View 1: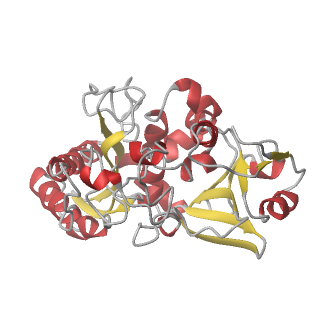
View 2 (view 1 turned 180 degrees about the vertical axis):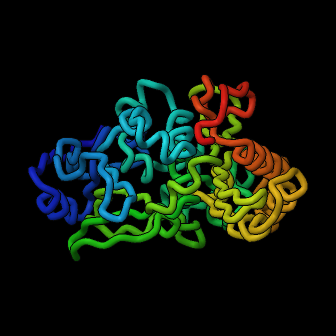
View 3 (view 1 turned 135 degrees about the vertical axis):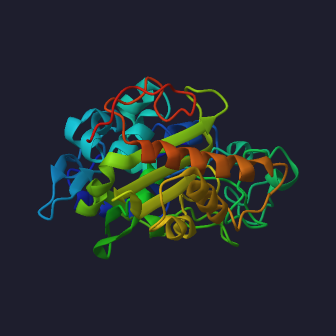
Length: 352
């Protein structure tokens, strides 16, 4: 491992000032960063430890009825919060479907947003990867790419974003609070991650030194609690990233869909909001035909980036499955295998 400096600032302001120095990286739980450092994929010159900053903690209601989640809140802590689970069940289900229990106990929600792709060529310093080494090429384009992107990819990069947590957050219009050298700003989570274009080395729109300090869910997001699910298909049901996943959140009034939110994971370099599918569902009856039309709309622009054409039809089916489960009602208890399409129904509806 390369030598690096280690700093433990006492405040967010101190952390931002320290991380503004070129070659710096923030360290929280390190569940992704330390793996990348050990593998020689990234080589930060200094680590700025934000894992103990009190300003980044807490789960609290906002004045408008929404929820604010500090960036260093652990994934498991958030998923166990009873009020959070009841108000935002699809987000809880996504959290509980990610990684192992040990990792969820360590990993932070801020780090979850900013985790790097699990593309094998990105992780292998002997392979050509534009994301790791701009201009080197992309060995995934002619290599093992069955799990790679089918939406928003470019000739420079076909990697996918690995987060489960981000998918329902994007569907529910979550907002990210950011502190940086230029001060405090916020932006929709949907605008945080970048598609690769010709600069795949830039995963997000964050400027050097900027730090995610919190995530906010607006009060409107809780209005989908009665009909909200997350479905994740993976090569093994535990401890695996999504081949394809989908979040579906509905407001059903008088037997029709008043409003729909749909997002996909495992299909692009960012969590993919399917606004075309939402438009198809607005005003429709919540039935299989409407769900098929929405799934077609969600994947209308999809193109294989290699030997992964099957993911397009798979994604359509996962979208339709997520919508059908959401329409049936949020279960009273999460399944024993959260987000698995193979999980049996766990009981009655959480909202009647």
